[in-house]
Length: 88
Image (cartoon, rainbow, N blue to C red; front, side, top):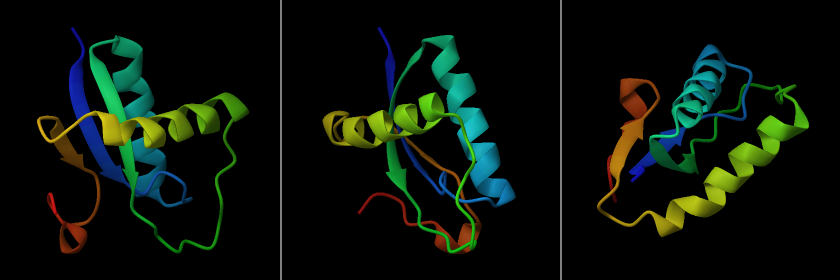
């Protein structure tokens, strides 16, 4: 059974945080052990991302799935400390 994991991260930017978050999430997904959901942090980096269409579709799928994970999912917050919001 997959482990529900909700992720709060800036995945659509060109920052190092966004790039690292995308790659980390793709690696987690490749293990097949996690049911991922994605909630976005919006950072104004001035650039979009240049990723393969498959990666963009995967990220969008995770965004849609986040609401179905429920409150029992673990939360991974991928950002700088000043933006930590926890669970609202």
